[in-house]
Image (cartoon, rainbow, N blue to C red; front, side):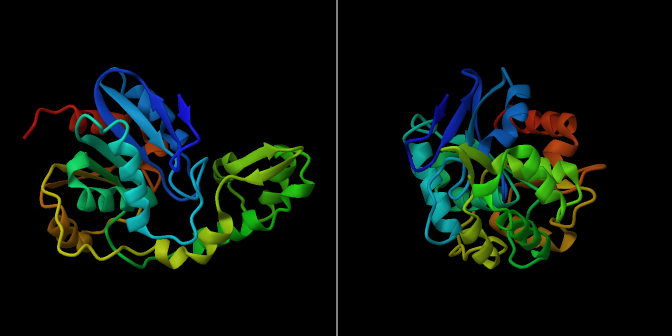
Length: 267
């Protein structure tokens, strides 16, 4: 079931088990976690969220993690979390939204899983800038179809897997095409996307699972004190032979790790 009329568009998967909310990364959509959500059944019922400026959710005038977290919180409070807190899983940008959500709205979050991102500012954004520029360079009004879009994108992006992921944002509309993602805002707000807001001394004293990719440098040893300062009950798991996209590169390991964390007895 998909909800596209509210500011936050969501898709529900399953009808039994513990409630789990998935928050995707930059360029993504909630459905990026569809196979993971299906694999967690019947132990979990999932809600796949399109974050603001992505998928079928609302576009905003600026990029702020606090605002994004509050919009997600509003959707959860009147939906899947109306009867109590839920588990939240967030990857990359969605991981930062998940962290801020837990810190600002701890009553809505039971357990938190953060995938390959740390609560820090900075880091290299050059690759994301390149990808945003590559998408913006395509004149969607003249496209004949996805095959042509892939051919044009191949001039700037070599990896067919990356192109396939990015082209999930291309939507036919009125005889032409448009991007689901708010490319102009995301390009202009890249420094904010790479940042992390002030937390005002808030902490989240519930179980937190940190999942890092072995071949990724988004979660480094020096981040440990900051992670545990905000989330004192943190457990870090590093997945072998995985880069930043842990859930798509090592899905079986990711699912088994997530299942063990989400359905474990309260502690």
